[in-house]
Image 1 (cartoon, rainbow, N blue to C red):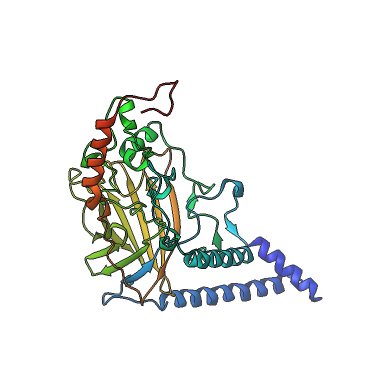
Image 2: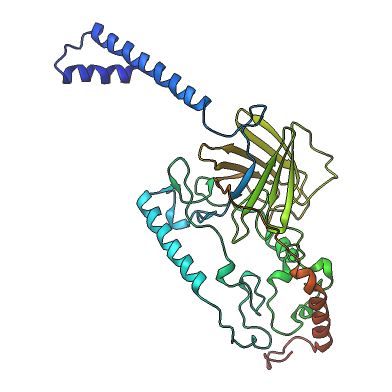
Length: 384
């Protein structure tokens, strides 16, 4: 502790004390005793932290949580290496978000509006398909920026250091375009998919995007990343299992404690999750995913490690690391708090609209194909 010794000697001089080695040594002894007492008190407070525990002494994670958060997953590029916001900036932004949210909720839709024009209105964002989608009343991404240890991060991702996803390997865009071509299809009222060879977006039920078929969420489920809505989770815990009920698509994710992964042939949409306790932290390792799974872009080589910690305020501190060597050039990690909602419930997300409409979607595609007369010519760009 040479720097501390010099600091204490300076204090002695400040108060006109002769900084003899004896007096400095005495100050060092008092300082060390203070550190011991402080450390013991800190450990005692940590050991007796007021958190719920099970009969075996493990932290009890059981409860309902809201994972909606306005902190962006990726840090805006213009923020560079700025990892945290000043508290006053965060408070101002939270106020702006609250006002905007109230405005959106009170902004009523026009009940007398006419049907969209033939071929759609050209707006395909958010799954609207050019014929209308959810309005802002149904969007619920969260109500405030999240805090970690009293600081306001500028992104959920903290690794890589720029707070952004690492680069992807070649071929990802083509693969994702094939999987989600029905979701991204621009509705023009013509069978434009016949303008080129190869599978079309509406060839059959299996060609529709998996989220349209209600097989997986529109957002990321493993790891859990905030979505535009349906962010509530319910955790039920026993000594041998932890169940996380995901509101989006209503998946029940089962985590087996101190078990072993099943065969690689037994692949699942949300992977195979095995948990173990490291002190008061539940560590969950998930592998064995399908080629298409609960993390957009990932493939069957996805490997996710999550860490759940119960905090004294009842919230969950959630940390995760994603590794997929055939998709991203390096692992990436994120963290944020799941907000405890003890008086709330998780209601069923009845994802069946696409299934009810699937017959109409496919019949409409067959009708457009029967009317197809070839790609438009250069002279008549409006022809079909």
